[in-house]
Length: 462
Image 1 (tube, one colour):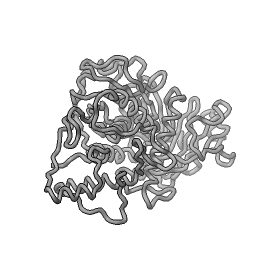
Image 2 (cartoon, rainbow, N blue to C red):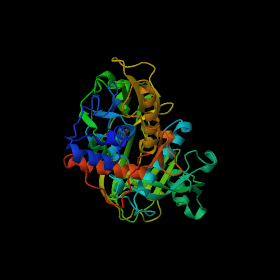
Image 3 (tube, helix red, strand yellow):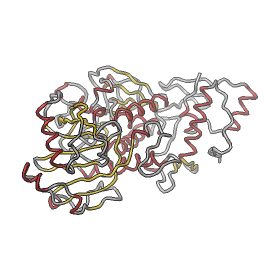
Image 4 (cartoon, rainbow, N blue to C red):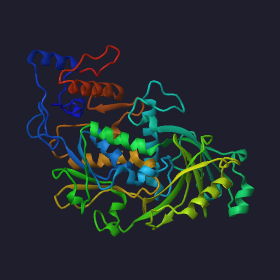
């Protein structure tokens, strides 16, 4: 039976691969598995166990949080009520940009951390080059950096937003859209804008890849309706992380029942327009239009209707979306665009901004609850940054419990050389990944690890 690789990677059995192989050859050790529900693993002192987390919600925020918790040494179960294709994350344009979300003081750092996380995954490939995708990372082929043009009435905005990517610049007058057409048709004035490069994520494939990564790490998924957070599984979890989005609305009568939460209905049109390779965004008073190119189509949007629960696409609204795009985008871009389909969904927005905090009161079973929801149209943009903050809160929740896994806090990572520090031990994340892949390969082949290739350096025992 296979031993979960996270135990070996995180230092529960701190032997080098050579000593492990030698010991197994001499003693013909059979690797035993242990329950992810918290039983003591082999080689770990009695009374210690892995921390257990229950994540509620399987959208982009829930899955990134589950993955980060696994990386921090938690056993994870994800409980969700919707199928993948019914999630608002599934139909999202997947464009990194703080959109329809309040409290930018918190959103800015989350957005920048997420930007760095996407870029780090893409650059992890030895074959990375600007504009390419990283097929060496599961889901990496679904993330691509694209040029972005955001048009605005700049005098009404801060000089430089706190989420600004390092290459952000002001647009020149020659880069602005056809102003006469916009003003005549909609009375819209655009005085300038910003240009930068940002991740664009093809959400259906990326969500599948995240689910697979969680499952490969030993995570479990349960599809069922919850009447309260107390029902979240497993029942012996040390902490429950609430990433259920609109499942926390008081209209549903379950979970957090948050009166500040509300839906923002969005509708988009999917078109075939391969010549559109840049992201165009205009979000002004009384006028919203954007074009987000993906591998299979271009997402043309959009709408934002507050407190609207109807998710059926509207024909008249679709026609209005296309007319706005024709007036806003460079002339001729929409002339031969073939409509492929329509989509609408409900963004989980929250007055006052997203809720990311430890609940003052434990749930009905005495478990601590961490809330992480209400990201509006910025779920992708805030995902990895919020996941890192949730992990730090969860580690504080279990710090007084004897645990078998002692991983570093997320903010203890050395960003300068992409290393992770655990006490005096410093291992590069690349070497740790090589070790993890080697362990996975070994346990799948019956518990005896093949000798690693010489060109693949493994972390050395200190």
